[in-house]
Image (tube, rainbow, N blue to C red; front, side, top):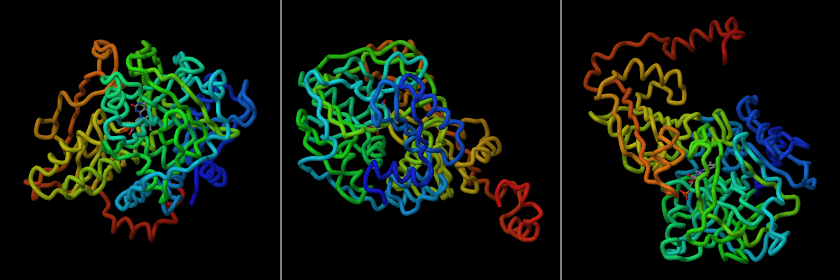
Length: 492
Ligand SMILES: Cc1cc2nc3c(=O)[nH]c(=O)nc-3n(C[C@H](O)[C@H](O)[C@H](O)COP(=O)(O)O)c2cc1C
């Protein structure tokens, strides 16, 4: 089992799943290489570690593609097995979540992150090889694979969330938390009281902590506690010298600062996870501004980066596993029976979710579909497909076949749900609608579709027999003819 972030990277190296690249530039070159690897790389796809970045000292590195392979996720989440496929990974992660108990962080006096401290005139967020990611981006983003840290002013609860951070100047950054994110709700609380909000970001944190920060947990549950549960030990934190916020003691880089009510700066354009300049096209949007007050970093720091793009891209697998687990667990928590398998498709980032069920009563499929249409969390979800569990929800060809042959195109099987929670990164919401609201969060809506591709229970006696080799006959045939077919079959 790995102990921390650097262990995790070394473990990937030992598996042969860390590609080292020397000499790539921060301006587009690193992100382009990372995008090509994520889209076109052979499985298992490696992390990419860049060093010798022009203009930066050797050892000031960046890491892309953190969760590209099942093994890197399994290793980061401390699962029992690393040699797994994507469904095996989901199974192991679900098992772990079911027994996960929250472990609060432990405050320590010091940690590797404060090996170097920059304050006053020394503050410069571009001290690190911060990338410009896409050709139409006009700025550099220091926080992409990042953890934003804030404290709820009413309860003292500490929230972590991954919200991107653009560089405005050497001591100014923004943060972009979309509608319904905890980070924007907390910011609004400080704002409405006219109070300054302490704020910090951390890069190069334990993979469990980064996973927790990108995972939608309930309001009031701290991602620190959840990460501790994944790791089986408390996350060690130091008290932020400036903000007093708990900061991960062994992060590679931490930036402390504060938000002053009403201060914004133009953010974007930035190419997003769904493959579009989805926020407001190429028009920048005012986002909360952070005045940077201190920077801490380890010797030879590694800046972690996430390069979103048209899928298949970085993040697809992480979202598929995380969202599938979240939908499945939430449906079960609501007491809905008969959920056999869930797969939130890689290309969909939570927008194409398929649930296989064992139908148990009339209306069961509707119940599952309508409930799941609002999952995994507000603002996500477009197509929800419910089907019988003879179909593998992770097999897109089977899913499309089931929709075509089992979902009559009528109102009983296809439901359109209007005025659901939307968000600014939704590419189907017209730009004019987004631009009506000058400042986030914007009260946007989206429309969702539920497709009931289950065969109707009341017509079970009439279900047509299917023309496909049964598992028993398949096995018997392969026992006899397997060697003759071995060269032409995709798998044994
Ligand atoms: C790589 C990555 C980047 C993300 N970037 C953003 C972002 O810029 N803004 C945002 O609102 N959500 C972003 N998200 C999603 C949130 O981090 C995620 O929904 C998280 O659970 C939000 O935390 P919260 O529930 O505490 O608000 C990102 C997720 C990932 C995996």
